[in-house]
Length: 637
Image 1 (cartoon, rainbow, N blue to C red):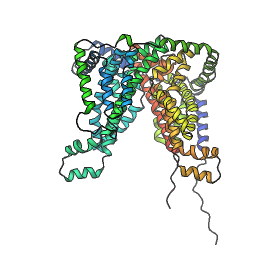
Image 2: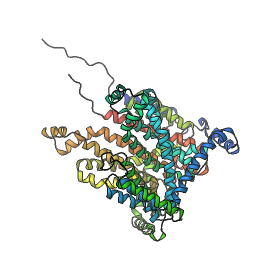
Image 3: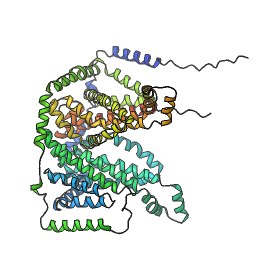
Image 4: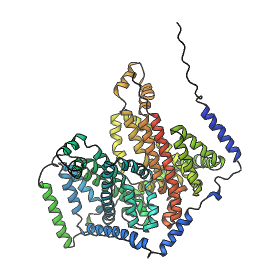
């Protein structure tokens, strides 16, 4: 008896969505052929009321909004910053290296402690001790504020699912926004210099503390909590004596991440006069001295590495010596260093010895100049090709050839294909808002530069990541280079690149590539390594060659992790937008720099809105692509 063949339900052919897109774009293109890029008359002039409020704020400092709310906050932050700076500059130079040594030495890692202590003296050796203390003070105040605010919020979110669901999208948005964007609204309420920098640093760096506190408390075993309840513990006792102690390593990991993020923004804060090491880097850029910029950048790197090592001593409980009772030799060492420092401070022995200072700025400047002069034909040809043959034609096509409704439809269609109507509506509305705040042309310019930097980054990162994932020696060789690339402040990349390529769009793109390739390489390598050995062996058992296994097994299975790397590359390139604008990159970056340096808060808010929307759209699109690339688990019979 013949069995009837089941007919599949009718479904649109795969090419129909593409045909619909093509028809829609052609129709819109013809209908709006005579329309300008984005109608100037549609600009809602958001900057006007903001600038009016800014002018009002400058002339009405006696208003209760300032005298009763903002001024006390500003005064408290300013008092804390000045106090910490004064104490750090008052203490003799040897106190901080000594404290670092004994704090790390308590874990038993004496060589690490010695290297960290030696590294802590580096800022003084290059004549940047005072500015390093200013940066350290800004970080200390910001991180303390993050801990005081973030841990209670994290506890609240861990104990209340509704609170956790409410703050999750806020934290997601806060981590998508590029760091420099936080500085713009701070000028409106706190002016310039240290206080707005500290507030912006707190807002930018607080999400890891909240997230890791929530995660740590949530991972406390339910059996442990139930046992405490059986023995009659109250809710507060369970929290303070069970959940928080067990969540301690997770909370400390969050604080450690906060410290690293705070270091990333304190340099950019020099744009609004925050001073510190960021000011040294900024001045190096202005005088085009890569050597001086490298010295300042390494000082920031050393601070980051030392603080990272100190933070890790509070996370790793398995280290020998951490759990021992009593002060121990390291505790007495801490007391001795502090006592000697206090005595020396009262005696006026504080500054770093000038005889120990040195500078390697001149040799580095000479080397960069030699490279510039030697490779001038190549760098000039590359610069001209990228600008004349890639950036300008693509920007002209998106800005003038393709009408703005067609671009809006294209982006919405891509979002719909990636994750449905919700993302499509969000993307279309976001692009429309960018146009309504008058940032359409600037955003197109920035988008083109971002695309170029991302494509160049991925062209380098994915092959190297695949190679590292297949070869452990390559991964080990790349590890220190990637660590350095991820630790060096973004400002530092731009200085030698400007000397090699002069000002313009290309230096910003090259610096963005250097800044962004590290996560792309790491996550690609991770994805390739995580493909199960059984799957690879099965492929080889069926006769697949090494190349076939790579292209048809490893890369498809690693695609979600690789797409996560793509997402990180895009976010890090966008974080360089403002810095690229400082060297002639144009677009939103140049407008943001103009807003920051001239205190044009209204323009800054408009630029910030455009950057945030662009970042969120690109973030959601790449996240959706990563989700779609995940292999579907076979249904159980």
